[in-house]
Amino acid sequence: MKVKVLYFAGLREQLGKPGEELDVSPAVTTVAGLRTLLMGRGGAWQTALAQGRALRVAVNQEVAQPTTPVKPGDEVAFFPPVTGG
Amino acid sequence: MPVRVQTQDFDAGAEIAALRRGNPKIGAVASFIGICRDANDGDAVTKMTLEHYPGMTEKALENIISEAKRRWDVIEVLVVHRVGELRPTDQIVLVVVTGAHRGEAFAACEFIMDYLKTRAPFWKKEETPQGARWVEARASDDEAAQRWEPPESSAA
Image (cartoon, rainbow over all chains, first blue to last red; front, side, top):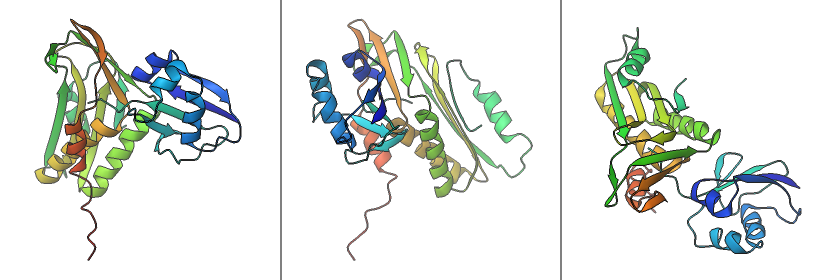
């Protein structure tokens, strides 16, 4: 299943890339599943995406939760709590 | 267009004039301008870079405006937010709300800023003498946004 994954702000710097197109196993069905898969890369991925780190997620540009489904063609973004204004 | 994300500066007077031009129903204009300060958390700030999530930012701001219009009887809303490099004294964000009366315009303006601070995908990175750092989200901003949540439904 192909998904587009984006990383912003401090997270983008820690991971060293703004995003990527991924072909993930259909076994990944939720935001939490995708996060676990990415953490499995180890190193900065494991640290930056670890549970307990304050991270927000959006699916198709809408705020999402760990249980939010991820479907083929979705755009999933991981980012730190926002600080605009 | 009620939402703009741009690198260039804005002229609040011109924006307000354009927003209320020719509309005799408007009796009140409330506005807020956020400005880049020269210090944060005890350190001098020489420069700030604002990043955002193109696409989601506009949607999030439009959703916030829709919610404000649902809650208060206001006429027009404008949000302009700058991105890119900013320096102390530079303007960052403009919110303008017009309405028939001041109470609704004031409340909607404050609500929009509180929600923008906690829901719109912008991130600030500031340059200090100790180096560059990403600004941390503040609990006080979450608390400010929390004030607008509907009261908890009582068991009764």
